[in-house]
Image (cartoon, rainbow, N blue to C red; front, side):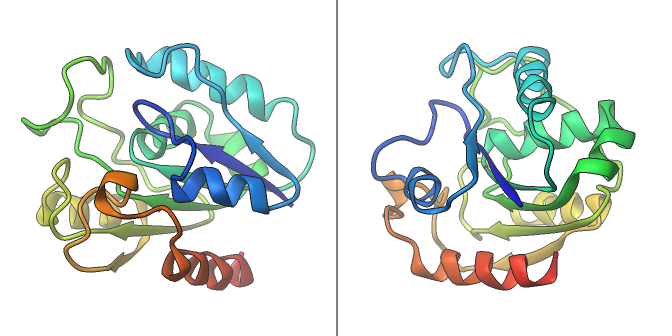
Length: 180
């Protein structure tokens, strides 16, 4: 099993739970984007696809924020490869690209895919995420066929929201990995 990490806008570096998990899990691959500060959907999807072509094992995607939307867009463009390679998708703090709060520096993600994702997927969400309202998060989970877990008022589930170490998230991931 390969763990593929997809960070969001600005990257998940240093003390971010995603960077910590990447360092802890063996067989981990980090998708390195060309521009973390001015993301373009097609470029991020292409980088994800390029990374996945080098992996010859089943993959579990561990994505945060814009990384989640990047994975969903890739799955829409490459459904056969996705069904073949991806064992599961662990999606944390999925943003709504159509929301007023969505960063203007990000291009091409509006009207995100609404197609069901192949395989098992789990969304972890906060009820006061500044980039996604509750009803839209629930809508995405239904459309993608993802199980949805609400963890309360936890912001964007990143370092600025107090998520460096995230033992609760590690437990969710352990359970998820036992199901894929």
